[in-house]
Length: 264
Image (cartoon, rainbow, N blue to C red):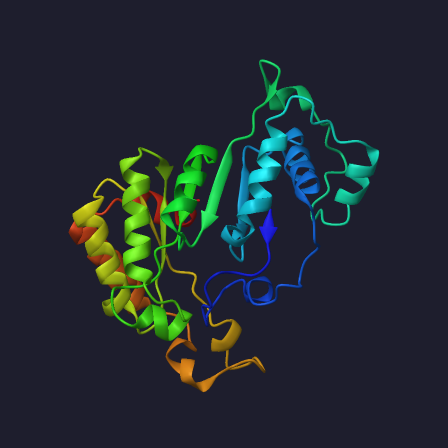
């Protein structure tokens, strides 16, 4: 379930159409959001992936929706399902729903995944700890000025590293994502991998190579800003290989996740 807008301002956002435009979406209340999650689950989705933009700024509505999902009496009516069609992006024409498979001992069983930049307060983390089953946090920048320069996000390093340590200490199920960016291997990728190896060495890390210029970094876009020229190209093979070799040299757990699509 995608949410519009974001609490960071990444110049290179790969989902800039929704993260930078708060009105690029359909307003929904908690019941409609719960209905969306319910329908996905009874259709056979293995989990509900809260994503964006970033879902953090919509936490109040998400929490209320989850509370409705946890009630045995949540049974969306025809009006709920009709309204849901306006925001549904996939339709399984020949798919036979089996709602009974979504229930366990009479209760709706909905595994929930928090797909986020993890730039949030300790209080928010404590709320999510109760509600989420799986975490998919980003770890974007090194400890220098890149977070402020590229995302207008101060206190990034200390906030995100603190939250990642908390997830690990709580024994949560998670995978860290790091997007390798052009001209930022030494200042961002290497420090990120160093920190993971030193503080949470068993953490699985997806070292991603799919960066492409987007939002304010795409020279072909009317939104392009020259000050982000360093990010106006894809990574070179040498940059990606340097990231992989560094992770391998440190002993970071990255290969099985990072290379998964390349083997299939």
